[in-house]
Length: 277
Image (cartoon, rainbow, N blue to C red; front, top):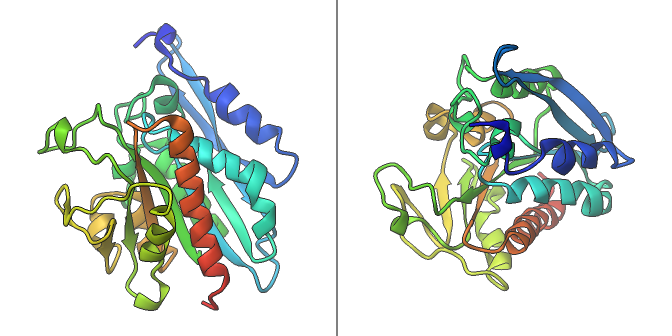
């Protein structure tokens, strides 16, 4: 793909907004490089944003990630919008570790994989191939933080059929994955109860190959998800007892998708704020 086929600008849509925030700590985790000097060379800074003070007692850590699949942009915009407009109201209770765009090259070219043809959300294994997954894993290990819960923002891209299914099978409503062994920590159904007031929720008993109930696909541990190399499974195995992945369909307008991601995430925060775990 030539440079003229870029669909978005990572610099304008993500980096400039991060640098203009005016609050939080912006960490450069590394630089991504694709191509060679003799061909089209691409380079991207890879960032994590920390909002709040992780060393302040009495506050819990929450991790937000988005954009592992470059053709699922709504989560990227939602994570940035949360940092810009909504995070401050929650900083009395939480610190936020934000990975706003896990796949910068995919984001620019509107592709599920990065420019090395690696699916980032299948690369969180013991020896990741992508620099993107390596940067995330290294930063998590160096921080040593435990997270009250994590949220990875995704979308069902209707032009990208799931393996073994046709595009007609793609979900056109909201749903989420929840990995949690402790029933007392689960937030999935309560999030859905908030979302369904304004947004249609998937009612299928099976979403692709996974059993679901009221728009929630449940896993008791991160092992099954982790074996697939998903970020949610990796986090559930090593850093949190509650990992969520939220999904919106790309057939909705972008504004609706972004607002749904925000509502789901802030519903989780509002519920967790009232709990003592």
